[in-house]
Image (cartoon, rainbow over all chains, first blue to last red; front, side):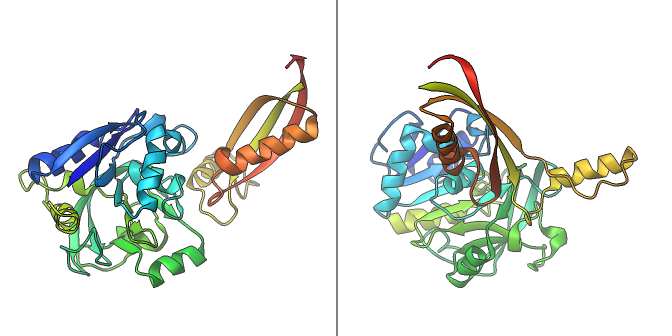
Length: 229
Length: 89
């Protein structure tokens, strides 16, 4: 079982992701340069955080044309798992792997903070959490406001595709605890097939209790358990 | 083939919160422009291309907007101008 971590020009979360899966969890991981056209037999693809292509045009808009993204799309079509954190979520939306889009935070401020995030559904990425569990996860973004039309939002909710939501520390949805103005306080979603997860918070920066809550760790444990070590 | 310069306006879709536009509207109010009731901040993209005629240039620019320049989930676009430019393509 091997993680493939894509490095785009401007990625800055690729090393964090590598550190999380390879050093902290003892998994196998390889970096995939954006110009490669194959996944080096990676079983799980991570689209990391950062500012791919300088966020030119729109966050994530140019990265989807990188050669590696063709291989990522084929991997998704075959049912292979892909997770996108932060810029990776934006890229997944722009590439059509996930519905909706991520726009400028309603505050117009870049937000860098540890925020409470509630687990909304369990699935192949979230098995090791409990539904309703409130995690403390770091966010660091200027364009994190999730937007989709009402029909799409209703479908996401109805099909259990909302994976994570911004909540108060006591686990309640409250506009005061929505850090970017996301529709229905959505922090992370999965695709209809359940093999693509996109989320603005950074679980890969929260695996080691020495420097974080450690609350992101079960996400990677869920993946390892499902795909097999 | 003729060379054209096509200008495209891309704006946030009506009904989707535009915090940038709202902030600019607030600043204009602060400057005393009391009549301002809304501002939308978008992008202006100029594409220079070769096409058989102006209609073909516009068609191509629309396709570019649909596929890349605008995000169909959150943005609207309009072709602002199409100008023939000097020089054979």
